[in-house]
Image (tube, rainbow, N blue to C red):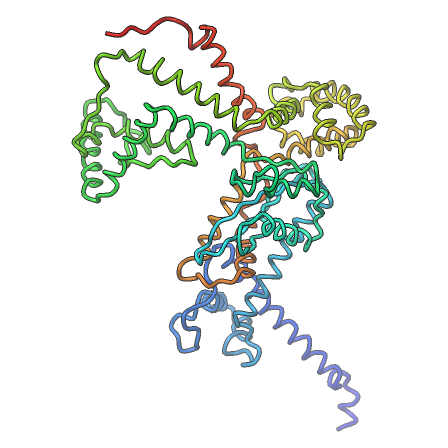
Length: 542
């Protein structure tokens, strides 16, 4: 009998051990796959992993274990290798295992971002804020153009820092970039907010980076600059300031009292019903909704518009709810009040703010960059301006010979793309960069493609860092305030990897920013010369 078993190779000890080993490998892979899927799902949704009581007798063992149990229902193979059916010393449900899996996933995302940059030029967008535990957190976002021409903005890391001194911030950024072999010499743009420790010309963060890389230009979010110019002008013009002060008082008066808020909605409901019955309003899907008043926020000028619009829509209901009416003095005409006392004064103040917040270097960079704008069939295209852009602002990337070659490429490029139907409906640099790669024209216009990629790293706005902090606040809440910095960084990387990526056509393009900065200058010139929309005539006074 022993001889018979010896002849059966399948029963040899090495074969049996190998078969058992393969079975264990399959079981481990099944468990690991389920764990990775659950960790990724929880991180993406911003859901906590652990529970208050994770013992086997608990009715709720935490999100991770409960989702694992739910996943195992109806799957006998998975159910047989997890939790109570797994060896007691190898259940792999400990928090350290969950953190390790999340850390591996986060590093894979960061490695993928580095592979997409692939030694190219990039921009850093940085901002800092306090988390729920009052720890200063530094959010780092990378903006770059992939090899296939797609413009990307990726959340890269969030680092806890002891303080917000420029040396501490710079060290944290350099350590994070160096950990993934991203060279500071390839940095071309720094995007920060307007805080003094960021924008300081001598001792600010941007100044420290400029010492290492002289052409890593500092860009204060253009959209934020325009916003600040409008807000500052509104505060300096007394009539506008009084208007928004009264508006804020009205909103606070209504919103601070549930009773007055309910009365406002009741008055509004009666007014809408009356207007529908008289035909002043039409029935339509989504129309005639009962709303409320919204506060104007200093960092979002659109919120001022929304707040004013809400008050206009609910003016009668607001007057009934607050018991107040507002009226201009009768001795001043409407034309004089708005044309001279308010409008002209506001234009002057806004021009002063624009001159202050958009210095000559920034305006020149924007103006020269807009020469690459493909909208309106390349209407803004200008060879001399583009060559000047490369020579003055990107000397590290274009030698003197490169600039001469660029000029000849631009001449051929202008004739080629203007006659190519594929480029006729392109309206943004993002689409242009992508189409150059798809059509393979970037091979013939390599220097033009290089310059377009450099210009695309200029951030019009830095909203991605704000989204990072919004994601952080949803992760590190009051009941999860003890999350460590590394776990928080990995958590945010997993959560924000899916919501940051391809940058669509910028709502506020470089060319539109240039137009906005010159718009008020034209208005002021027209006002002074007594022509155009601000043209002459004297308003009468009763």
